[in-house]
Image (cartoon, rainbow, N blue to C red; front, side, top):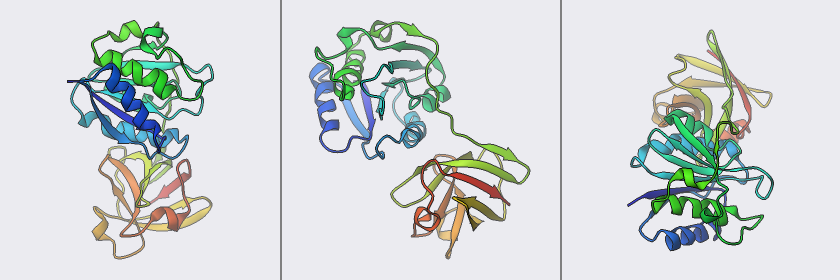
Length: 254
């Protein structure tokens, strides 16, 4: 049984329709909703969610990500085979952090009509292109049958610059608790002691901690479960305190 995951900014009934298409074409496929709560058009958050999640699924899982502000334009539809997984989605960079980490083996532009519904909407290609393509591959069709092979596609890179006891980076994700995930991994550098950071022109102090409970108040900096540094507040929202959002630049000193 092949597993297909779905990551979208759809909300509402649209994700359910995608699952209906998947099950109609590939009745035995197991569909898992990774999330449909990505903020509208937020490629960075979607790319981070996929990057931090893909490896926890069975080898051979097909990961479908549809956050697609360019739907209906001439942007391409991609099918990427990596060392252990397959990734399907629009050619706008959303797939690249995860697929690059796992090691791209080959990539194709989805252009074969057999991998699409008979009528393709200009506004809902999650239903008409990406879900059918995933279902066809889950049913045993080769990824190479989906269209022509390509060697170049859009990349999304999380910006960071690391120096001596300082780092410049960006917020790449914020969860429902208001934690702010930064574009720096714990393996990139060792932060110790008290930290000062500037975001949106405002200066804040934070304490390097191991977990939320180490904070009795104020802001903290810790390495989150995905291995990236996060600015956090214990039972509070770092997002609300700082006014930061996905894409905000952050300068750290310690």
